[in-house]
Length: 150
Image (cartoon, rainbow, N blue to C red):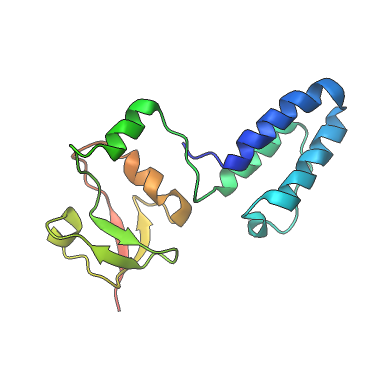
């Protein structure tokens, strides 16, 4: 499950602030941190009014963070293990354009090409969630890609 790094900082702050600030002060300070530090703050035009900090955290988690993900240690070891290779066998850029198809990969076998544009992976259109979507697909299970080709 992806959790923005900012959430870790916010959770630490919230645990500290709850002992020393009113709920309103805590939520206002939280908004201030988001406006100042959140890398994807441009994804939302205006921050909503939250009833409590759990609503704020849910809001940020829904917005996503394309650089941060938290995994269990076992999953992390499997992901980076040299003994196992899994995945599609492609690399894509921030726009979803395939920039590399690895030789002998499942992607090459089904005919994906450099320059193809990925529209969705397993129905997920949010590019920030694609890596996690692939990671959460059980081994030996096909991944459905919708591709746009020139």
